[in-house]
Length: 320
Image (tube, rainbow, N blue to C red; front, side, top):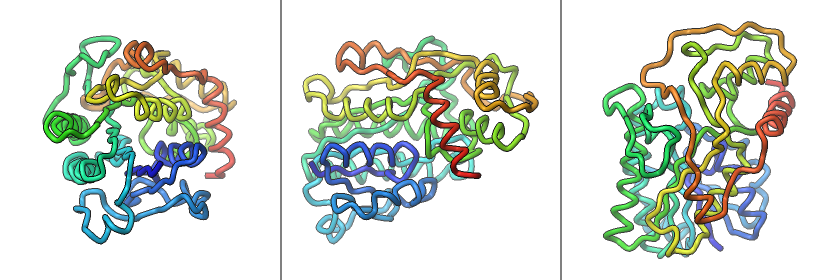
C-alpha cells in the first residue's frame, strides 16, 4: 500500500508513520518542518519503504513531483497544520493557508490517484461548546474573528473543502475530529497543557493554569489515536466515506485535577500559579465517541496514568 502522510514529521504524524511502516505500507512523508521536526522521523530515514519530502503543502504539486513521489498513492492522511495555541498564534496566516490551499492541493492528488483521503480536523471545530459532550452532529460555537479563529475556522473550512470533493468530485474522503492527544515526541513547553505541565515539573518550574482550573479536557494517548486514524481510513466506503468521526478519550478531568496528577507522578514540589483565562478558550471538552465505537469498534485502551508515565519518562530521557 502506497501511503502519504502530509505533516508526517509532527508529533502524531511520526507515530502514524511508524505504525504504517510496521504493517507493510510504503510511506511518503511530506512536511515543511514549520512545526514538525526531522528528529521525529530520523529513525525511519534508512528504511527502504520510507521517503521524506521537505516541501510546503500549500505549493501546488508539479508534474515532475507527481512523477517523482505522487504517482500511485493509494492513501493520503492530511495532518499538516500547526496544532498548539502557541504555534498557530505565531503563524496564523500559514495555519489558514495549510488548511485551505494545502487541503485543496492534496485533495486534487487524491482525485488524480483515486486515493482515499483522511482529513484530521479538531475538537476546536466545536469552539467553546454549548453541548456537552460533543457529538459529531453539533455545529459548534466558534468566534470567526477571534485569536483562535485561524485554527478553528481553518479546520472548519478544510472539512467543507473535503466534503465538496466527496460530493462533487467523487473522492473517498473521511474526516476525524481529534481531541486532546499526548505522548512521546510532543514539543516541550509548546503551549499545550500536557507538555507544559510535564516540562515545568521536570525543570522545577511553577505550573501555570489559565483561569481558575475548572476548565475540563479529555486526554487520549497517541497510540490510541493512531489506531483510530487507521481504523477510519481502512473502514469500508459505505460506512466511512463522507463521514465525520470524533477520536478522543471521553475520560474528562479538570485542569487543576490534571495538574495535581502531573505533580504526583513526577514527584515535583512546585507551585501552581493561576493567570487570566485565554480568549475563547473552551471551558469544557469531552468527545462523544458513540459513532466511532458503534460503527467501527474503536475505543481508547490506554489509561491516563499509564500514558502519562510513558510520556514523563520520554521527557526525562530527552534531558531538555
